[in-house]
Structure formats: C-alpha cells, structure tokens
Length: 232
Ligand SMILES: Nc1ncnc2c1ncn2[C@@H]1O[C@H](COP(=O)(O)OP(=O)(O)OP(=O)(O)O)[C@@H](O)[C@H]1O
Image (cartoon, rainbow, N blue to C red; front, top):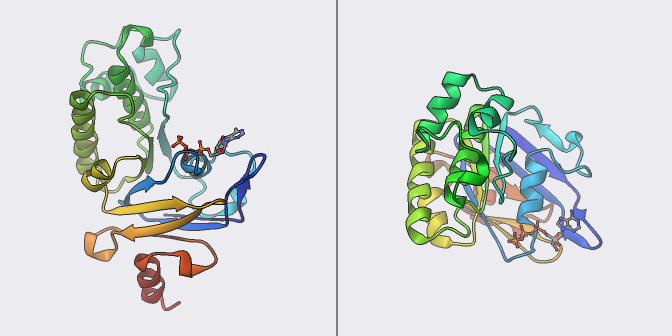
C-alpha cells in the first residue's frame, strides 16, 4: 500500500538516518522510541507534510488518504465541531454520525474551546475519520489524559480499528502497554541519527509491514522474514 525510502532527515543536526519502510492495508503499528528521537518527524513524513522529504520518496502510496491525529487536536477554534468536519468534506449528516461514533452526540454546535482535552481529541479523531483514511496516524493519542479518559479513548480506537479492518494505523506512544493492546507490530526508532527496527507482527498476525535502513543488520526478525518471503 505504501513504500517509502529516504536517505535521512535533519534539522540543525541529523535526526533520522536512511529509512526504508513499507505498510500494507490493515497493518497496525506502534512507533516507539525516546523523546526527541524523531517519531513525530517520521509521522509527518508519512503524512507527506515534510517539505524536505519529497513525494518522489514514496515508491508506492503517495496518494493515499491519510487521517492524522496530531499531538494537539488542531481544530479550528472559530468553527463549531460540525464546521470543522464539513471543512474536510463531511456532509452534515455524516458529521453527526462521526461525532456520535466518538461519543460526542449533541456537541456539533460546540466550539473546540468548550471541550475538555479528551473531548477535543475525540473530535479531532472524528475529523480524521471524515476523510475515510487508508492510513490513520496517531501521535501520542493518550498523552495528558487521566487513566480513565485514556482507557476510554483506547477502547474507542480499538473499536474503530475493528470496524475498519483495511485501514492501516501507525500510532506513536511511549507506553508499551498501549502498544501491546493496539498493534501487532512495533517499530522502534533508535540512535542518532535514528534507525528503524521492527518487532513483532508478520504474516502470523494477519498483517505485515517492513522497515529497515540500508544496513539490514539493524533490522529485527520481521524484516529478515519479510525479505526472505519475497525472495530477496
Ligand atoms: N521543525 C523543526 N525545526 C527544528 N527542529 C525540529 C523540528 N521538528 C523537529 N525538530 C527536532 O528534531 C528532533 C526530533 O523531533 P520529534 O518531534 O520528531 O521527536 P519525537 O521522537 O516525536 O519526540 P517526543 O517523543 O518528545 O514527541 C528533535 O530534536 C526536535 O527538536
């Protein structure tokens, strides 16, 4: 579904090293790594938002529909929730259905600053779903929520993933328990510049993705298995 290769990404210093990765339909991946290693940078690249990593880096999937739940909800504060959803293409009835799907029935005429952080994040999730994404990107969706709200959001996301089996997901988290409950696969970003290491998943999980730098010794077993399966 998506295949991406680039030689690296830095700002003042190199952040990401050379990365090659592939995502298939229905893949569920959690992206882990220390603070500042480059997780959000990689999500931005996957979303096609990075001005340095050009569309030509995508050998496959540059035209996918992407839903991106940013760390901050980034709803337009001068628009109601309905208007925020309509702005990305939802019809009014569809917007109401999406809000109800994320537990915000009756909040369509509210403005984002009338919501708690957890509610705003759910509204932003509804906006992601409004584009019927092929790929859902989640950047630390449970950060700054209390345990109860985080648990609710996790259950909501798990339900949405179950309802949309073809939708792929990459979720940044610092929490291994979240990773275990959401995704069959883990991608670890490590080092400076960071390299991607894959752990878990594979065909046995019914979903597959691969990731590695040019030196495949840095890669986990899945990469070796997937390459072997392709006759590489
Ligand atoms: N637009 C930018 N301009 C300058 N430096 C940036 C920019 N975006 C990211 N960086 C730097 O790149 C590095 C990686 O940042 P990134 O946000 O991708 O890390 P992260 O792994 O998502 O961190 P965290 O877990 O703390 O959110 C950091 O050192 C950050 O300061």
